[in-house]
Length: 118
Image 1: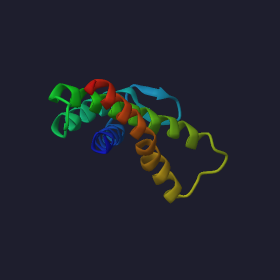
Image 2 (image 1 turned 60 degrees about the vertical axis):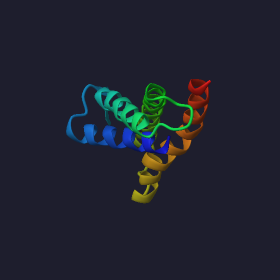
Image 3 (image 1 turned 135 degrees about the vertical axis):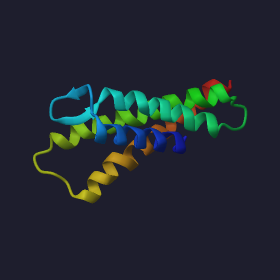
């Protein structure tokens, strides 16, 4: 789950650095293409690291959900940080953009894996 979230976040940030298109909102440097590629990267990571009762397809499905949710939480934190009256420190921004999405996606990944495994 953590690897799928990390792969999704990395793919989303790299995509946004190169081409943040189409923009989700004005003033927020995140694009819809990044969220889609986060799902693809999460699916790839989930398929490679599947385990226990999950098949390759099940691992890919869990990874896709985890990657997408992590990217969407990162977009939400981007909205949050752009609307603050003053910018937080670089350490706080790094925490908000990386640790918070990974922490919030862990229960989603766990419950999705339980649902897929049956």
